[in-house]
Length: 292
Image (cartoon, rainbow, N blue to C red; front, side):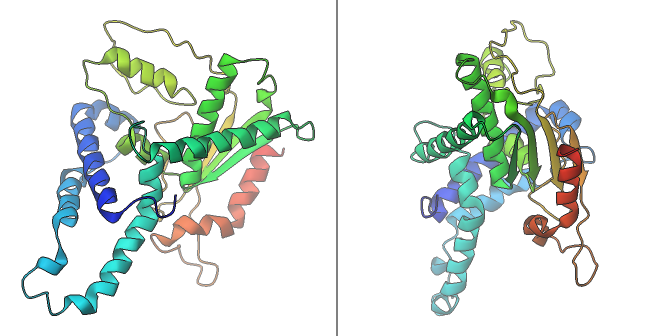
């Protein structure tokens, strides 16, 4: 996904996304209150769109009195833009579900290869149990992979007869709740049939976000073949990307309270997102949970 999105494309996408999330929040406060917001509201939804618009349209080289200083600060501006792309670009590309987007085929290729890899493990007689692990955006890809496998197994049960080998899903540093809140395809209240079809499509371990009885109820044609997969999610309050997963049926959400090994203090805010890989307690809990 490297080099596939520009700074302007990323900001434009985030503006559109934040506007959609704010609309969803305003129209579905009962859903947000039940599944996501246990204390207060997403205050930044009211301001995020305008802040992003400021970034999108503010051309620092055009600001009066900055012409002289711009050559000196240009390297820092460039580095800031690049960091923004590095952190958010992959999410923007992968979260694209519009088939008309130039990024859609990238997402499709990632998922195609991911499903192919899991299928090779399922068909390999050397493996009796498969546990899929995903960090950060990798947890989103892992989730989508299992969702796709559920579809494939419904279509061809014989081809996927050993799908029961998949026994576990482990996520850490996962933004899945934020992905669901900000980047899901939102449907207007009146489009209840379309909303149900989308809910059926995203069938793996999804909670029902439709809290109202619809005029017409559509039967779900997809059997929940992977509902027995055990899912544990690790998160830390100092990791702004992760969180307690509420929009999904998770067997256990485990807060880690990670510490810095040298100082013994809590990991600094923001740095915790990459600290999971070094936190031995997490691996111990994984083994205790799945290797009993």
